[in-house]
Structures are given as C-alpha cells and as structure tokens.
Image (cartoon, rainbow, N blue to C red; front, side, top):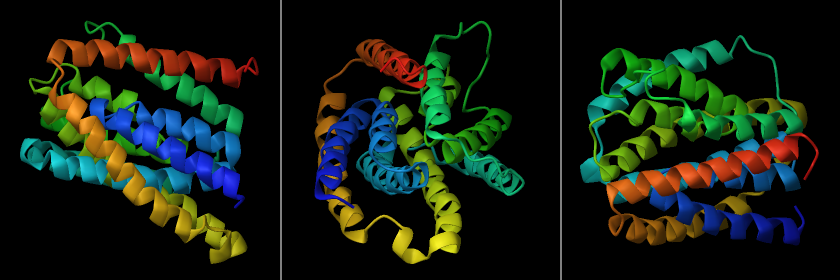
Length: 248
C-alpha cells in the first residue's frame, strides 16, 4: 500500500473516530467513503471493519456502565440469523452501489416517527434490529442510520444509546471482517489482505479520536445531541448521493 494512501486512511481514522465518539455514528459513514475512494471495495470493508471494531469496542469500554446488556443479547440472536442468511447471498456491491447505499442510509432518520414504532428495548424488535443491521453492515459497510431507527424512540439517555450501539457495532464489524477476508484469502492468499502495520497504527489512532469525542459527548445535552446528529448525517448522505450520481 502506498505511503500516501496509508496516511490518508490514518488521518481519516482520527477524525471519524472523534465524530463517532460524540454521536456513536456518522464517523463510520465518512470513513467508508474515504476508503472506497482510495482502495478496492474488499480492502475498504476489511480496513473499515478493523478500525471501527476497535473504535466501537473502546467507546463501549469507556461507557461500559451505560450498556444495556439485555438489548445486546437479543441483538446478537438476530445478528446470528443475519449472518446465516449471508451465506446464501453471492452479490457483491461495486463502488457506485456502495456510495448509493451510504447516501440513502442516513436519510432513514427523517422518516416520520408515526410511520414506524420501533424500540430497541422491545425483545422482538431488538432481534429484528440484529438481523437487519448485521446484513446491511456486512454488505454495505455501515448501518448506523438503520440501527438508529430502533433507538430513536427508546427510553434511554444519550450515554446509554451510544454505549449500547457501540457494543452491537463491535460485533457487526467483527463479522464484516471475516465475511470479506475469506474470499480475498481464498482468491489471492493472505498477502492480499491489508498490511498489518496499517491496522496496528490505526488502532491507537482510533482510540485517541474516540476518547476526545467522548469528552465532547459529556458536555452535550440530549436535545443538542439529536439535532447535531441529524444535521451531520443528512449532509453526509447528500454528498454520497451526489458521488453515486457521478456529480462529485
């Protein structure tokens, strides 16, 4: 991997882990867009999965007292079903398709609340979230906006939302790494995987960004948290839709 590409990825890792440290999402959307622009889809998925797994895992650790473990257990059941379903899917998205999904996914947060009555704390819906989010995260790279739909009506504080989302996404990104690594290794061997030195450097960088973002999160109110989150992910979605259309 060229040094310039590695530096771009590391810089993007710092910035996006900082953003995710605040909102529990959005950073992954941005990072995937950067990766897709500089490396192949398969490499982007593996690198993104490794970086976001560390960032989410560390964020979950920082907020471990706020994690709703009951929700996580139910989510994991659904995720297992989603993983099983993926073995029957042979479709692999190209770059334009990934940009399109990245652009459409953030707009889900603007669906009227009256259209959907989702609540991650309800057992059946937690399982459903696991199935849907795991599938989308594995194929498209990110699924934060979809997961957020299940949290928007939940009676949880911003810390509980970010903490619980982080631990579920740690699992999702771990699965994504395995899903995309197996065909790469089968086709070209282990040497075709992203360089290990890049992942080792990205891990502490993502942790630094996550800790800095966590400081900002503590100073926000729940109202400001939701307002900033919606505005940010909407802007990101519009940019990716333009990218998919070939405008950018």
